[in-house]
Length: 325
Image 1 (cartoon, one colour):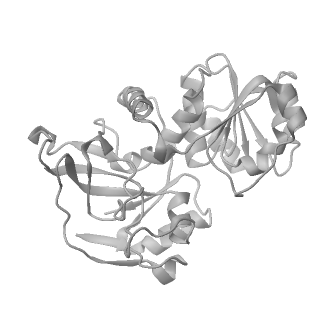
Image 2 (cartoon, rainbow, N blue to C red):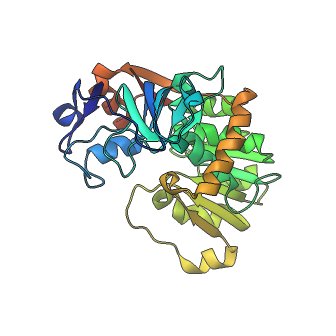
């Protein structure tokens, strides 16, 4: 098979290599997926630069991808051969991810991709879509609630805006950094956008919510937004925090306890089995019904994996970046 890999961490142009590797064979309970696409997420380039230790001498990056099952291992029905699927956790706690023409994974990690949904879109589900869904469904419903999505033009944010609307949120607000990104977020269903570079976020939320505040915050960077929480959260509101640009940050205790705010930290790689199954089932229904928009910012062929990583690292594209096989 053809694959991209690195044998040491560092800049994309210095460590990423494209070449040939032996075809993987599925073990018991596994399927082999002939991949059409591989999603590039921020966590992928961060891992490549050394944000987490290498667990093997060679790493094929990327957790997300989509393709067709072409072989199955013992215990997996032959009927799955030929099934269109999307893959999650391809390179989580294992060395060989989706940036290759083939991957073997446990059968549960290859989820049926509804007809009419492209492989490019399928490469965006494992991290962006599941993260957005979990952030909006953990610890109670957002139906009838006011929701703030930070970074609404990003991969997770774009899905979170749509899902908040589909899940019955009364109001969906989002932060953005440009007029182009504001248009992108409104097209996804945001009621209003707040430019955090040029506007007072706290004051805008007070005005937009008539001083109620937001009941749920879907937060991509709690190290930046954490200090604003007491000023923008409604009484007993919830923050679903899935990212941080700093390893350490502080909350001021008194205003946090007065507001009764809850903070739910989570990482999509480690969702409980029952939570993940419920999310997959609900999202499959939404995908089959054609309810979701998929923002593919750019596609790159496998031979341009360096350019794909650099594009995500530098934020060149609005929407998800996908590598095609």
